[in-house]
Structures are given as C-alpha cells and as structure tokens.
View 1 (cartoon, one colour):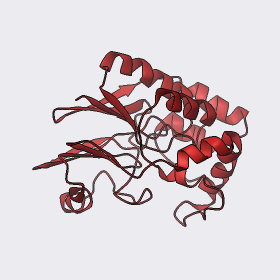
View 2 (tube, rainbow, N blue to C red):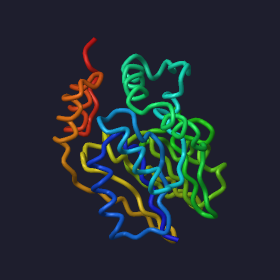
View 3 (tube, rainbow, N blue to C red):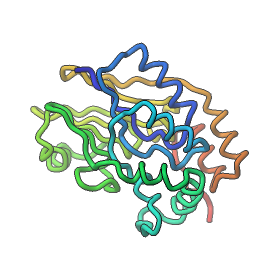
Length: 232
C-alpha cells in the first residue's frame, strides 16, 4: 500500500493546501498525519478543521500535547513555545484542543510505524546525523521495516539492514534549508520525499498581521528554513 506521512503543519494553511493538491496526483491509499498540526502558524483553526474533515489517522506531536490546559511546559520548550501555546490554545478553543491532545502516540501497519519523535515520547530529539547505533536502539523496538518520525523538520532516509529510518520532513518551519512543504511517500520499501512550493510570504505576513507571539522570529524561520534564537 502506498502511504503518505504529512507532519509538522504548524498552523500553515497554504502549505497544507499545496500538499493536498500534490496528494491528488500521488493518490496514496492512506495519509497519516505525524503531529504538530497547529502551534507556530497563523491558521491553526483552518488546519485542524481540514485534517479532521479529511479523517486522517495520526499521532500526537509535542506542540499538540503542550496545548492541554494546565500541562507544565517542559524545560526544553521554554518561554518561546509557551507564549505560542497560549495564543494557539485561545484561537483553537476547547473542542479542537481536546481532539488534538487525544491523538495516539503511534500509528502502524504491518511494515510501517509512525511516531512524532521517538516511541513513547513526543519531545525527545533524534537528529538527522544520529549514529546508526542510536537509530537502531531507538526505532528498532518498533519491529517494523520502516520507522518514520517528524519533529526535527529535517528530511532524510537511513537504511540499516532490515530497518529503514525516515524523517518525513515538515510542511512548515523547515530546518533543512528548503522552505518548501515536505512530506514522504512510502510504497513497497521505496521512499520518496516530495517538496511542494507554496506562498511562504503570505504565511509570514499573516503571522505579523495577527500579532502572533514572536511573529518576527517565526516569519524569518519560514523564509529561510533555518532557526535563529530571538534576542531576549
């Protein structure tokens, strides 16, 4: 079966719309959302409503989990994410937040498993240049041929004998220097990352227009595909 994994939309409706057009050409048997759907962009409501309407199965992302009322902000998230979470939670309302935070930690079929970060933890970071041993140790216990995660916004494929580890890339806020929306298609062990252009400037402008927390930093991230810590 042809499977598409669409992860890290981060409230970016133009990126999602562009990918939906591309998916019409790809025609996967199933599309799995890899988490982090809402926080970090100006269109969280539209993104969540569209994905719910599409009925995609998916997994819990760290910036989905952080939207739960009263949940402490992990140290690694810091004030930057906490401010964005408060604004996104307000925009989404309780019903959408409840849906987001109820997503499972893992999706799988016989050959492919999808997690947001690592099995059982949607915050842990496994970088794109992690050692083969670390990838085996982290994703081997899933017991599948292909393990897919998002979270790091850096698309890659690593083939390790009987295990292939894939990062799906991100629809928004890339960290691999390519600002296009990126998702992955898997069929019979073949892996294809698809990169789809969209109106980045519209999203940056919308962030600034609504006064989203740290909008300048998010806009720069969108435009460059790299992250620069904003000044304190």
